[in-house]
Image (cartoon, rainbow, N blue to C red; front, side, top):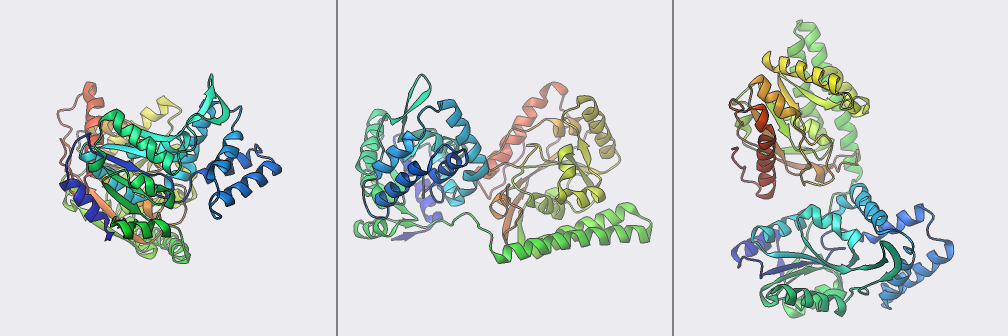
Length: 482
């Protein structure tokens, strides 16, 4: 029985709420595409921590334990042994780094929607996996999942012994661990949900009353058909093809030609601001069109309700610049970190838009720059600021810096939050390539700063960040500003 994401989310929403309902998610191949162990294994190879003989043994054991149907515990034991002598802290650091560099981009976007549906119902959401904690924890935290049932590594005073304290949670052992977790927390497994993709997880799925085969392997698909379990196929993270490369190249050419045309128009008319406005509008529209990117905007009227204003947006991708340029179109500039000045993608845009470059290493210079930004606002030019300060690896919001909010308060202009839902899906933060598709945008109501004081800016920052987070979590209904 095939199911859609909307059907699964609706069933969760209409089902019983509360922490006695569990939602158990397998990890590799379910929440993320592929196997995160590959990233860790390549890291160990890169560091030279695995010799030729160890590599050969591991490859033989891995093929035997997967393709040939042998014992997967052998390959796991060999993998654990390569970690002997490493500190727990160092491996946690590796896990965090690999999450940002590689693993974050493999999270299935629609898996995030299913997880969020369970969290909104107050269910006890758990990652249950044969993977290790260092692989799972960054992803679980990003998804808002508190509980992990996994293969634990043994350590002695913070130094890994090369063995596991739980054994590999594979097959029946994983199912038993889920049952033990449920007993300890009073979870009713008969009313709980389970999601997995592999044939080894048939026993695990059979422990819950509401199993779901998610992007299943053929054997699990057959079992799901036999037992009447729903089958849910989630879309994979985007991978760039020829059309994406051609579209990206066209977008870069179109963006630069649009900016050049605007500059030329301003020179011919003697009106520099008109030329900048024309160039921004042309370049953004041309760049998005040639990249095959469309915008689906909720609340577009809020872009024009109060100008000048400080526009703030969440930041996932280099694509954000084009999207925001297409939205704001005229009479604005931006505040950006000084390091971005050297980014080839920013050089032409920076020359035309004349943003305020912030030197975060020099507080005196930074304050002088921000004072200049306030004067621009008072002269009628709106300001765009991305308060996270850097592109985030996933849609989960980072910490907001306070500069945008101090500027808005000092200039006496409103804050207008813009929420970008999925630019990171079309162009992940570490990618130079844009995939075609539709970007979802919500422009929220302007936030009046007239009664703000210097002492309550921290609270105001938290309020605005929260409404952006709520909008991302409850899309597409935009959340009203406080």
